[in-house]
Amino acid sequence: MSKLEQWPQGLGPVICVVGARPNFMKMAPILRAFSENVPAIPTLLVHTGQHYDKDMNDKLFDDLRLPKPDINLEVGSGSHAVQTAEVMKRFEPVIDERKPSCILVVGDVNSTLACTLVAVKKNIPVVHVEAGLRSYDRGMPEEINRVLTDQIADLLYTTERSAEGNLIREGISADRVRFVGNVMIDSLLENKKFARDPATTLQEHGIDPKRISTPEGYGLVTLHRPSNVDHADTLSSLLTELRRISEKLPLVFALHPRTKTNIERFGLQQLIDTPSMIMLPPQGYLEMLGLMASARIVLTDSGGLQEETTALGVPCLTMRENTERPITVEQGTNTMVGRDIPLIRRMTEETLSGNGKRGRIPELWDGRAAQRIAEDLSSWLIVRSVATA
Ligand code: UD1
Image (cartoon, rainbow, N blue to C red; front, side):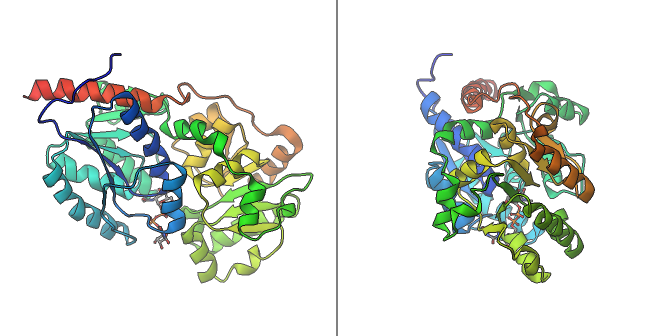
């Protein structure tokens, strides 16, 4: 495809929205692809400020070489209603002032839906990257964000083929949907060579790296879903089992602020207070890549890690009842274990005895998804601007 030489006069910038940690690794390759493949496109990076901690935010921007946001709405934490409403209130004047040709949102966090709603009501087209994923669990706030964003967005880029079927079942026309691959895997493939050695990561936190250099290796754990960490009984039973696993295989935890707060609130510190459970604060992108790539097993409830472990070929046990990313189970290294303690135990043992899933790389998870989006979107915007002129 020939490169776009000039951006049509009168056509505004593409406003790219990020809000929370899992958005950053999706947006970084998209911005890079815009500047490399269609440099004529003006872009504007808006950060809603949903995540604001140094650990959850600044470090990831540096690691991913994301440009500093042009605008930060600084919404911070709040209930879902407050956070969503606050993003909407603060995003509206940005659209009024900047008159974008479209807004581009990624993933499924509250900021994704909030900005989509604002734009659509102002007749600004919305492009959703990572569309069509469904867990079919309406108890998950992310599922509500996905369903609503996809219903009202104009152009939907998908990461796996099953997503298009989900969208069509919801009455969305196939001509709004394009299968382009997985931008999060673009980030992973680009940054793998920079991944930080896990021993260095531990040392940086004053932890003796010998604690993970056992003949068995180590496992990596992340846990932050409200369904797993917001109830004392559930959190306590998961931590008890993880402690048991750690007696055979040291476990490194990257502790999300929500989980840390709840462990303290429920008085569960004694469950994690053992040398075989190594607690770290939320990690940077390169530290996390290094920790994942060298782990014997990953135990998680994250969406992103299910895909990243598939791309890295590392066995992953997902402590959720369902996944919106079924390709990681069908083709990748992911196994769903829910909160079923005997199943977690059995699958961990199977994996450690060498029978973990090996998997293969899904279609179009090839590092070029963002490039496909940049080229397709620029043509779409130009065709659309001519049609609506
Ligand atoms: C959000 C996303 C979730 C994503 C996760 C990754 C929604 C609905 N959920 O959930 O999909 O997997 O981010 O982290 O958007 N906090 C801090 N510092 C921060 C950010 C949050 O301390 O920088 C604390 C606050 O006390 C806050 C809690 O963490 O109440 C939860 O943060 P929030 O953004 O509301 O949701 P997450 O659970 O992080």
